[in-house]
Image (cartoon, rainbow, N blue to C red; front, side, top):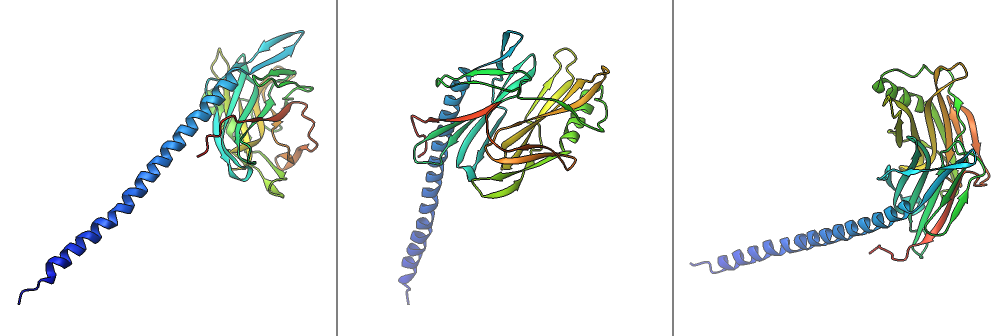
Length: 285
């Protein structure tokens, strides 16, 4: 007897086989489309940010004159912060004579329905700074950003670049801290990011003279910055010093060798500030 059902069974199997591939192809196309949209959004956000920071003027006032800060061409960091509804952000640095004088976050703020930018600026200068943004905002600091103090029991800065870099990283691990997050309503131990956020070098000897380290309470979003720098002490010998800058409205403390050396409480914006700008175009899909 001839089995007429066999060809039909084969056709059914083939139909099932081809139908199983169709959703996968559709999912792949959808993922590629979403990836393309995200890439386009990222490029647009970075383009706006780059133009904004290029038009930002940062100056250090000293002795009746001023020194204009030089903007580092590329952001020193890119990050996001989901608990704070920051989907994308960049970190920028200005310097004078190789030393950093200011740092600025430009964040995509998705906390409210209205699309916003958050601009967060912090002084690294040992004198007062004046800032003018293309948005019309201005700021004059009432206090220096950095006040350096010696790091106790630290070996003298090494003569070799690689050894100095290792010393900087080792010294950074002696610091720790915590913040009380208003958003998360809890005390959070900050995490030292593994690599320096910014390193700077002597223009003549090319030796590392300092580095800025970031402590974060959410992901890699810097909450406070600690600078470690090789400076000459009263006797004229090179020694390691540290300074710090806050960039958060949260309260907290910084510790050195588990001893509290700085408590930041009330926000007065003596040497840092933040403000919001409306994003004219929301690049979210």
